[in-house]
Image (cartoon, rainbow, N blue to C red; front, top):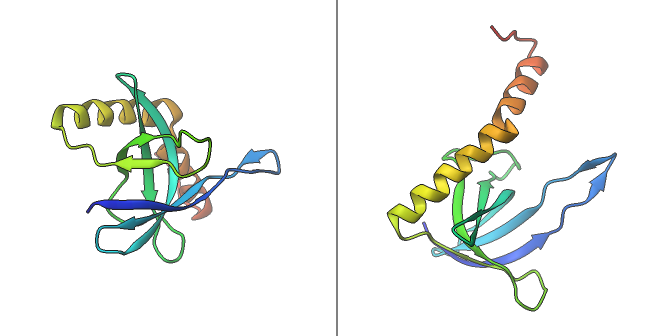
Length: 125
């Protein structure tokens, strides 16, 4: 599934002392629009890459995992950044490794898991 262009970008905002997530809407090659939460921007070998979490129509994480793209910032200072597929397998493996490091470092999914367990009244063993 490829991506044509970045249609809309919503900046992060501070609310109640916490940074709210940023979102971007992508138009795929088949003209389907998908809203994604921006997880992080990573640097690997002096290039930037972005990790996105696609959302379903209800705004929840869609099944299928995260999407990783090469990320090029808008040179005019605007918000029309470019995303490109990562075509090279070795490059993709480096980016995936760095993203896994980021996940481990931030405890991103671990925090979500504990929150769900707590809300559902479950216990972690």
